[in-house]
Amino acid sequence: MGSEITARRSPRIKVSATAPEGKTIEKVIVQKDGKRFWIVPVDANSVHFSEADDNYSQDTIYAVKVILTNGERAWSSPIWVDKR
Image 1 (tube, rainbow, N blue to C red):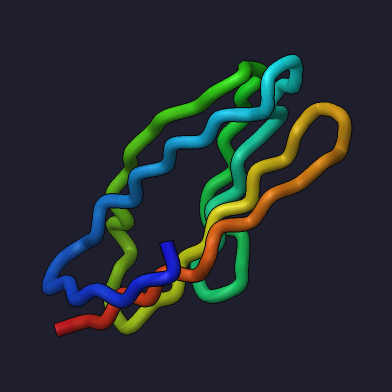
Image 2 (cartoon, rainbow, N blue to C red; image 1 turned 180 degrees about the horizontal axis):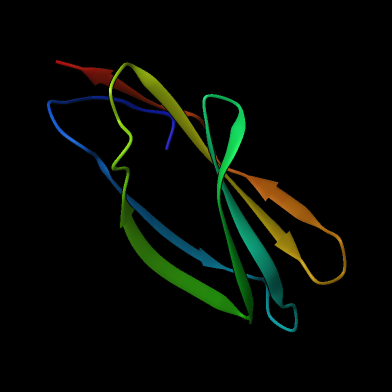
């Protein structure tokens, strides 16, 4: 989180999130350049997934938002991916 990397081809986005004990994750939103890119419904205490960004063609900023069923939210730091 909060890092900068370089990628020549489609980066693989790996997300792992765990809610505090007794809480449930409702959904995970992956943003690309400030717009919703993936929405993953969860309904569990933790989530782990990995997807390639097949539309990667230029420098990109990703961020992840986790929303719990009680409305609480958490954000990742941005991750900058520079196209080479």
